[in-house]
Image (cartoon, rainbow, N blue to C red; front, side):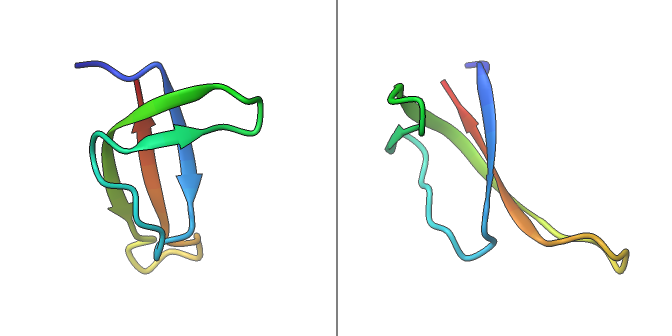
Length: 53
């Protein structure tokens, strides 16, 4: 399954696959996958990348 949108959340957020998410626009969608992303030593913020249906 491919995603139609990606959102970024705090690294401690919990967004399991198949969860329902309501975006600020009011659109209700489903989580396809979520990936923890780290800066790898670079000065970038750690975050959770959430791919949505």
